[in-house]
Length: 348
Length: 265
Image (tube, rainbow over all chains, first blue to last red; front, side, top):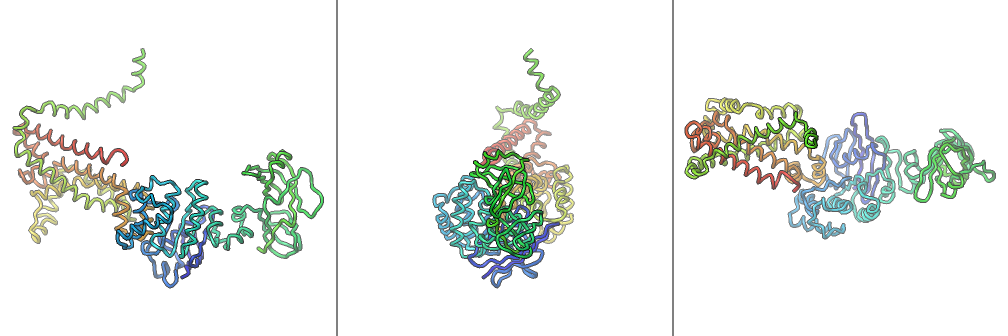
């Protein structure tokens, strides 16, 4: 019962064109910047938005296609919306029971099942509480219970952790991970947060401007980004270029020396921590060394990230000690150095 | 000096008309209460007054129920369906608001009268004749009062977030179940406010009622009609009827206001 979809939706000048396959039990994260079409894809899968063309099939049944459209209320789905959309006039229990009641379960049975779901998400004492009295984390868990209570075959999560503060987020994320592991159906997680995607998903699909630009297991995507957006998400310096032996001529200007000879178009990445900054041109070991000027300095928790202009532009993470020693200011001229062995090269 | 300065802060151009406006609204009501023959009140509260009051309350309530049944779906249609020409329909719905009620009564006669476009068939096929009956009172009041309900409910529906309805759909709820269990409860304050306005308008209805339903004591003579009639023959009785109507309206509005309209529930 694999979910198979070709989602093509045209709205004004925006076109979504996304092929998607989700195996039973698999969690696929759709990751992309705002306006990439993530929500459009989710709404199309939920049946809230008909496809312009393409199809959605699950096993033998067609949900959307040339000559079939199953309305949202007839699809076996569960959706957790970004702001949860819990019904304000119903208690937590009634919210969770709503889907079962809608699908024809008798009242007593629906309430018993809803009560079991509240137990499972750790909210047994909150059955009679109205949504406005729940904390963000609790509301999120009620929304998850409501979506799962009907036993859907497709679970859609729209930025499920975006509305939570940082401390709650950590805990809710790990709980969500547990529930997703128990869930036997297909899961699509829509998010712009790479951490949510990396932790929760078995596979990532990166969506940019309505198209999938990269997909694969989180570790692979994190190691070998294929676009600037992905590289930025995973925090790597990323360059396109053409390799000839151990030299790569970069598309944006400059050359990099790489550890092993290759030929043809390649991507080169290295982490900002691999970059060292020097006031004078450093000598010795096989390094890439080039002149740069400081564009911006950002303070992070334990390191300082320096954005540098040069051929090529580069991000460098330096320690506070180095920062103090170099007395960096925007506009300062420096030398950046990266060991060839720190670079990772893969075919474009 | 100080007093002058303080006074100078409130612009006279606004304060004077405001006070005059307040007086204009309240003095007639006060006058009504002052001139009421409180001592002989009980003798004036005749059976006819009771009859007219009962008829008024029943007709206004029935008209309100009719408006709820027809008006809420109409409001939903205007607010939620992607119907083309909704703006035009909305404008049409508000016509009875600005139409002189007498004109409304004439229009109702032309359509539902015994020789009317529809009335003719109602009479021929079912033997139903609405004009000059209690049912006619209800129809006339509903015609005049329904726009108040529709406008109020439609406003509430348009302000309500339609994504809750989408959430209900993803949970398997049909459109009808969604409307009953999700949409309607979320716009309940708007519905209650609209119902109160509608009921108050129906209770005070005069022009359309007297035109379409006439003036038959016990059958179509509601309180406003009774007041008008009494004014010709027995001014004291008219005052008493007016005071009763005033107290009933204010009482109902005040009661509902505390519970529903003001403050979050």
